[in-house]
Amino acid sequence: MDKRSYWGTSGAGVLAVAEDTGRFLVALRSEKVKEPGTWGTIGGKQDRGESFRETALREFQEETGYDGPIDLVAVMDYEDPGEFKYRNFVGVIAAEMDLTANDENDMFLWVTFDELLDLDPKHPGLEILLEVAADALEEFTNETKGTLD
Image (cartoon, rainbow, N blue to C red; front, side, top):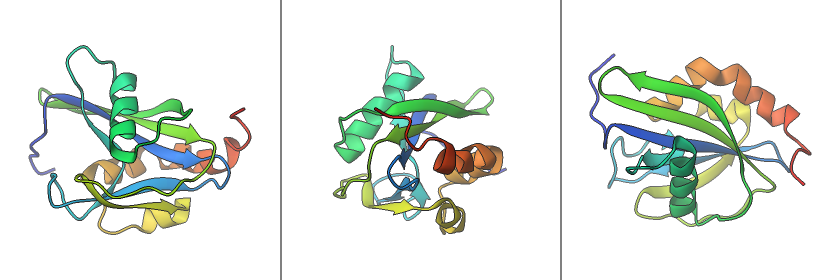
């Protein structure tokens, strides 16, 4: 694996799934961030004193503007020993929403699990998440429907 550089030493992110459709939310990264022009999850650097969960929630709210209920389920931890740690969450929300691009993302897209697998190009973090946790992610499209009140 190529040596990567990171913003900070730890971070967290969210791959949201809409309970009403079973589709996942991905973001096309802008030219202002690392790995521009790639499809990825929504997340970022962990601030001092934050838990991974707090980081994921803050980053999701900052990048999408969404501040409603979200059920975070940790699905994978990534570690580049001595360099970087990142916790990936699936975030179950009630329904899809329209989102507006921002400095970090050029656009947002709701995709089925099969479309998620076919996205190109993928951010390296999304590639690893799919390699490690594809089975768990696919289960979210079927098993989480109806779990939010």
